[in-house]
Length: 366
Image (cartoon, rainbow, N blue to C red; front, side, top):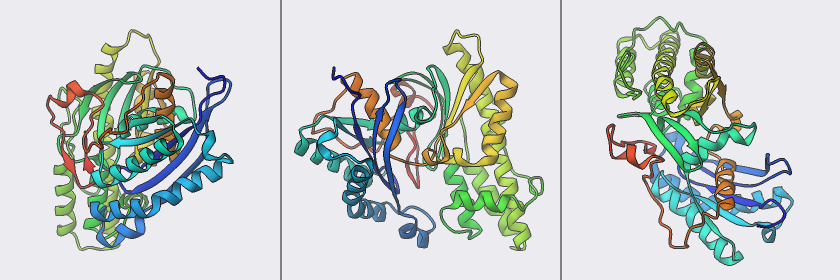
């Protein structure tokens, strides 16, 4: 083992963000993000109201070399200081995953450094540890444009899926709601902003699976109900605001109720007396109303809520570098022929059970 903490270059390209980051740890073992560069593709996808996989793949190829160069430059280091290259190898839009992974392979070969294959979902699972201590085990709600899952995180590489979406992800529902009402792209922030002007009780919308004895999610019916509500409205600014507020309230209720069920299940995976740890991560975790709802749930259930800073909620490479750091310490390296994976569940056993992994507009949800 080397005397100094390793320096890891992380690369993320699973959807529509091209990102690179350098990370190490200090003498106390706390993560130190030396740089974090993210190139957005919002302008490329805005005309289409959502992420177009082919456009995303081309944008990654165009931007990734410059993003990596910026990350190294911003860190104040040079390439020789890097101890390993960690890259998202899945799940995600396969064209984007391939772009980042190939860049990582080229750097690993040129620098003669180890390559670390990182599961994008594991990056999110560990992301709260970028800013604050969060010891294992904890209950994780991973909620984003492509994923909505509840997992017991027992340790690095040790995950048990407690619940998952059977159709669409929560973030996909936000984007669809924005698209229906022509609010622009990205849809999540647009819906959240408009919801502050509306009445959350104005429109009656479904809460899928309410009261069911499991921790799974379903958002397809809610998406359809929102579309029908808008079709039946007069299309006014007031109507849009009420629909946005009612939709956001429905999502908050669903996430809270399903997470409460998962909390009951999680207690079977730990013998700690509490308070227990609950982590929310992923792009939708940036929604303030959702965070407030989950804070209230945790307060009532003897859980503490931990969430990454907003800049680490959406896809970023710092979380990939952190996951890479942990795998580096354990010597978990990949061969240069490691394949990109469109699907890569954190919990392989749960992946073969219901609900089966689905495929949304932002990529695989497993």
